Image (cartoon, rainbow, N blue to C red; front, top):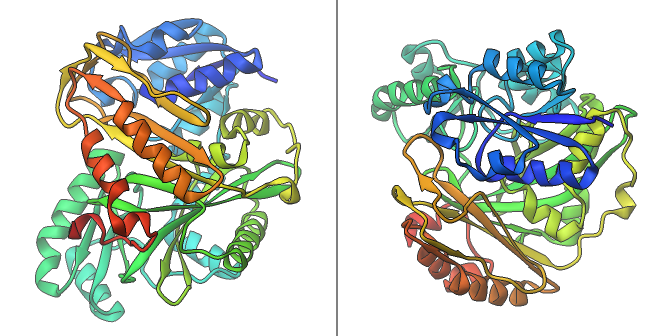
Length: 435
């Protein structure tokens, strides 16, 4: 096991990783921008290093500064969290070159799976049903030709995408020009890669993702599915597991298929297979995220399996200590993302309590929300034996949560989890757009 890990991230995920390391007896190193010098993850880590100015490009995306901090601190491994450098093969290769373990897939595997065309072919060969689409399109003219061949409507997506960035719905050829320019610009700004691809628009549908863990010994398990259909502008707002739309037979079949697929492609680490689930009960494979997901904690609440600790163990070469039969999908868990709706300074925080209530956050009194980073303040997660009880518990927790001084979406989340369409489980990706 590693004795010291650097966390190349900020906010609630940096705090989450530091806590896991402390429970494992592993020393932690935080990095921070000038804007985050008073942040909670800096205070909790055993040591910390300033890596640049507030802008992410000057700090949390500054590969050289982060590697230098790790070498100076004597860290044996770097955990990238999610976002920033978590799916950056070049950074993973830099870690290896400097004798540092990147807690994630090998850079060669990351590169191979980041190519959407290669990935879809691999998953098709592994037995999954794949959404029809293209490889990267190099021009607007190529995009128009590809869209006409696939058939409208189509989705335009960033090749290096994540977090809902660089995605546009194209309903006709008249929509392509502006959306192509916007998607490529957004992708370049968010990921440093402006390439995009097209795929068939599956509608109506739910967004279902499956969480997997795989080790170097060839063992792999699936920890069930998450329903991530509550989204606005492709940004997830609420996740739940298990999905109310998926029955046990379907669940067992897609879990088996996911495990078989990751074994066939030789994947190692934590990963997520993302699908669109249509009204006929078909799972259409979209993409694979080769990192920890923001919503990983809702799966942890359901299964009792600590994904961050297992990420670290797998990176250290430790085989999984359990098999698929040990994974219990019992009860229900729901997560509400608590976002800032504008900047502000936290005056007071009250966190709801009680059995099986969890709030992953970076907030402490005096925290300043700046315009430099993502608006996520925390993730409120609850668990109960039935979905009905989980819904009641979430409503109670949202009513109790107080974030004074920073405008948030707490009231909107309360309205959403109280909406009859959500409580019935009868919702899809159109929910937020039709409220």
